[in-house]
Image (cartoon, rainbow, N blue to C red; front, side):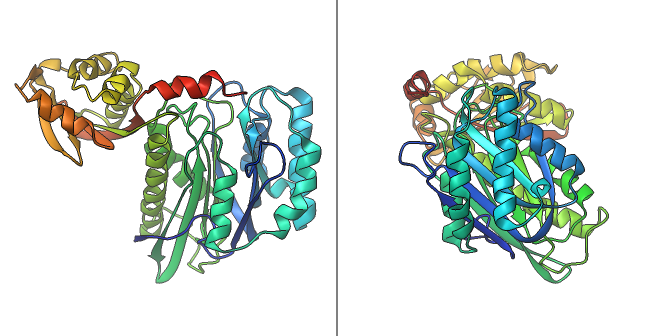
Length: 406
């Protein structure tokens, strides 16, 4: 099982495109991912009570549609809080794709990301769909164009793919994602599309996605805001030719491992590219009684503004980390906690049994100046562990969000 060069077009039977439709100022702003044959589809969506029009459409399709064959995504406008007109425009966007590709409208997922409260320029979108369909291609470059077109405040493209074997058949899984702000556990403004040529039942595909989202995309935070639009789609078209996975056997768990690899890599890219961020923050809590406890505590640390600003300032203010653990909703003994920091510049134990170790502040500052900072917390009370990802909080985050609509 290895990472390969590619994204959503890496598996057999998938094409993609990304073009400029005029929604944004001089940047690609609409993407299409297409399976040449009907695929089974799965999705996970925002927990925000306020849901964008495409989210409601996609949730219905995930429940009711036997097959999904295309995903269209626009960036620049979220189509959230737009009432009946927003729902109509979302349907018209899906229908334009369906008509051009000659597939059922109920097989077209939609997604939008951008400013909340504005109506889609639906005429521009409908006019762009023929070109979007015409430029569909199965090349890596086409997948990259799609990944570029879904970006909002992202500073770089996020895509990856893995190759593995199921019952002697080579299977490929690819993915792309966007997200930079309004990112908090339970996904948020994240949009992700995952594609595979695996043959698997719709029910198990959904279960695999839901379980892996819990351990990957739901374990990242940038700014404690959960958006109205977050959606992750997974399509499986069966072209790898493996026996259809209908039960939780060895083949199923092999696929879940591959899915976790792709989603973890994308999740870390998303966290590292938080708005204004200068470094990735990875927090692992081990020695917890349950995974849920470890997850709650690790997310509490990455979500703390005081921790995030300390990381930005390369300040080994470990008291902020213990404080964030303390309000994480889990009982533990602070007098048993060990705490370590690590980066490409070295590692250091800051705390042992709840007390500072007498470490060198100069060494700690140097370690924290790395691009990927890891914090390890050992509670020493159980067998479970969990990892969460976030980023530092900088001056630029405020600048970006102070004039986001202008």
